[in-house]
Image (cartoon, rainbow, N blue to C red):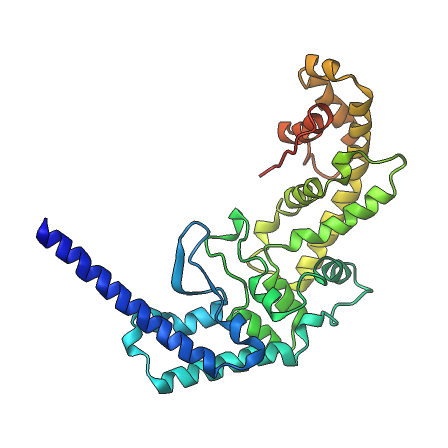
Length: 307
């Protein structure tokens, strides 16, 4: 037992010294970075959504890649290497500012998809801090790494002045949000007042996720702008077809007494929804989970989520 305890203590001491060395060269690196993005460049993160905080894990992927060999073996870090890394980080962050990427002025109001992009994200990505931290905890389909997409590919798009490609690459796991403004417009055009369900932001978000990710995996790794714009227009059309069905189904539920809906066991509600939804592009909403959103809101006032 004494030997085991000694072994554990030695291991803990080694880890402590390693972390001290890492913190030392990260502190020195911070002093070499330009002030406008000093803190953003060295924002710490997680290795994935379920891991504990790591001493040297950076949210910004290209910074993390530059530092990883020296996080693993901090004794290899030399002053000359630290200066080179600082220069590369400064150049890449300076590029983002010099290109005025954060203003999103490159998005056209005359293009439906670009207009929705600007409308959806203009107020959410206004600073480097927003850019670095936005989406660091992505949904389960986005993969295990909970960082941003400010990576080498993003920087490469900026260097080529391909600003929209850079934005699409950066937002690839949040592009479904472009459908939410379409839903808001549909709600305004309803022929009768909307219920709390149709006005609920969580419901709209989850509906957008369900519609967008039907088929998105087929193009996710090859997001050419032409293909993506075509995909968006297809999904926008789906939303516009679905919304009248939602209105009709919502109206029927609100006219029925609570006990009558419960007694019918969902069969009548599914039949009603099916008839209301005939002619729409796909039967996205004909499922038990969707009905529970409406029915539980109507009967119990509970918040229900699809994921």
